[in-house]
Image (cartoon, rainbow, N blue to C red; front, side, top):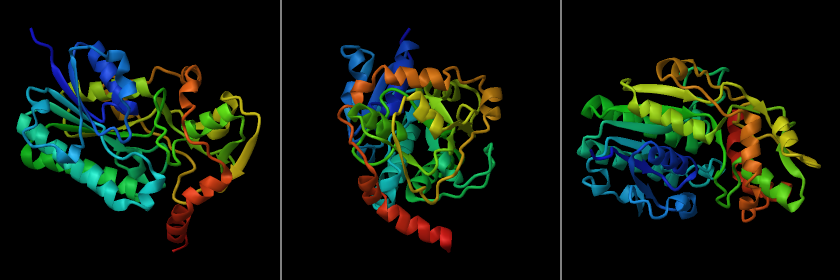
Length: 335
């Protein structure tokens, strides 16, 4: 009996590569599509020589509708896109092109191949300055182009479900973290920033007073949720995905053993707390988080040397990198 086939867009990226790990471990043939702008071949090196893994280094926007990579696929896990948040203020066209039009390309490929289910990696940033814990029916209020582009991609996925009957579920990820988290050279994810500062013996740059909380969920738990959303009979559903247990940045700093901290201005348009109401995904998909925050941070610290090549940020370079962010979103807050 042949193995089931799954397509993972962005499969060489942070979450996508962990999705590949899980699928291969569960007996799937996996086809990866990645432009390698954010992903890395090294994220998949442990599967070198595995005949069940096929990789194509391509931009999703260039996929032909009859792409052979989708032929015979049961499931499509769509992670590909631009994930860096801060630069979206300066490069909105590229974000819309990749995260919206690129998604439409993937939807068309999935429709042509008549896949059993497509699971879209959405973002909790669509909620904006949300009430917590945040339910899936919370009002939508994107604060910056990245958030808008991810929400528009999600809306396209559900439009294809409505019009073309493509089976779709969407998962709004809150704050995924874990090994292989991206370090792309632009200012972004807190773990990459802190890990490089720790390696270099420099102060940790803590935004605001550090009391802000994020609903961190370890990446292997994220992958398991996506597999559950693919294999369920549920269709046309949105799920919030987090640990349901927000952690403060100050606690993260403590776990990382920081010896010195410098505080930088709080960014406009960012909530004091992200906190997913995960009651729907736990009840409908029989999923729950299994990796504690403390254990997840330990797993990352065990591989801290992998962040040697990450950019080193300080208050001045962060100020430069976020200048447009403050100019645009600061004016929005005052309006």
